[in-house]
Image 1: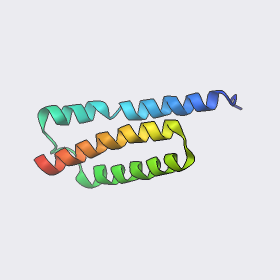
Image 2 (image 1 turned 30 degrees about the vertical axis):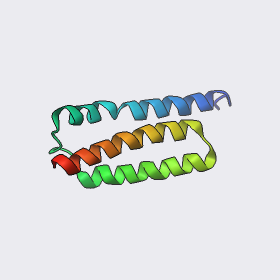
Image 3 (image 1 turned 90 degrees about the vertical axis):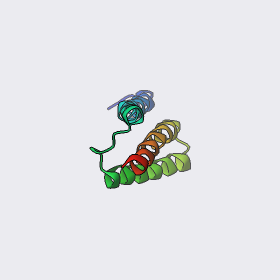
Image 4 (image 1 turned 180 degrees about the horizontal axis):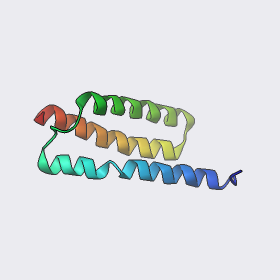
Length: 87
C-alpha cells in the first residue's frame, strides 16, 4: 500500500511525464511544418479526450489533472491546427 502523501506526488509525476512527452512532437511540427505522418482523426480524438480529462479535473479541483491536461490540450490543438493548415 502506498503512503497517502506519496499518491499526489505520483499523480504529479505522471502528469509531468505524459505532458512533456508531447513537446518534441509539437516542436518538430512547428519547426518543419511536416504533418504528413500524423493522423488527423487520431490527434483530434486524443484532443477531445484530453478536453474531457480537463473537464473532469476542473470538476474535482485536482491541480495535477488541470495543469497537465491544460498544457497537453494546448499542444494537441497546436498539432491539430498545423495538420489542418499544412495537411
